[in-house]
Length: 266
Length: 251
Image (cartoon, rainbow over all chains, first blue to last red):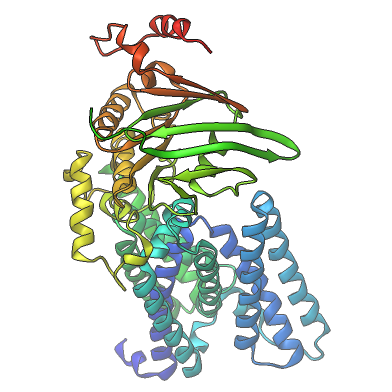
């Protein structure tokens, strides 16, 4: 069994899985406590527009998706700050328009033969060294942001009105959280795919939220639980030749169920 | 008497606020003296919240002026400790009581990362003041409504304000919790000015020294002299006594 670890693509998959899990633990916690799950879902689906643009114009897909997701996040930030009342409608709009752009552009691309399923359900076994460098860089950026701005982000997330009164630039931090969410969504698409991103960003976080009394510990616990689910999911995927993203999510969901039952009993 | 003569903590003159071409507040004049216990009452939509937002500098001043401690108003919580309404929301948030209190520290005096030792000590000190010291490391969601409100008061006290402003502080708290909150405010009132926005007259008037009724315009009542005529030995002002009290008052 252990000899599979000597394959480079398996090593890459494990490193990427753990990196993405740790990042999702931190950013997923922020998304959940800020009640931005729908927003993050919107960004994830709108990101498909980026995939379409990249395929159509021949630029690297990862780059195209990243830029498009960040632009979608900026639009979301702008809209949610300006149009608080109709926020759900606008998120739905961006969600759908992004996907539509992606589909049309893929239609228009001559000789298109990229495997769509790998974007919808992830392709962790196809992770490259470059992807890992990008993930590591994002991880470092997130750690730095959280170290220096932890208190501001905590204040904005917990009580944005009070944070604004005490002189914290709420709009800046809100936009920052959304941009980091967009980047996280892009790399999570690599691992579990577009459709399942939200599960990775919420299931481990739900478990952690019930076990932590501070945002900091919630991020750590989420990161480690997500890593565990990813590794177990990957192992199942390899052993039974199943789609990795779906395995990871089912392992997470099953664990969540067991966790909830354990809580009820206690 | 102590040195509270004419020390005005808040001066509001000819303040008006228009929203959608209609007056929300019209020509408000109000003077709050040091160590007053002022209660702002009035119907919903009467402009209480707007006045609070103006005092806090959230809403821009359109006409008239507000002076806080003899200085023109600017948007900051340096002089005013603010306890917002609805502190029962977001109770699932993973945050400890002491972390909530430390949000009250001023942004520009903070450590680069983490919490400075003095900040933690000061936060513990204010938690002691509100009687919540032993709950410092408890998750905010595990506290009762009254306990949570006292933590919010501690957060407001963290920056050593001269004025404490509370918006409906007991609207979602049980009777015991309400009593505790008001007893605490009474104690704090020995040192600082307290302003409470409330619709719960019977509870509030037991503690108030001054009352301002706001419904677009403002009517002011100084209760300190009237109150003495009533026996409130059992620490309770019921609606009946309230009516008698207001009957004596010339509005």
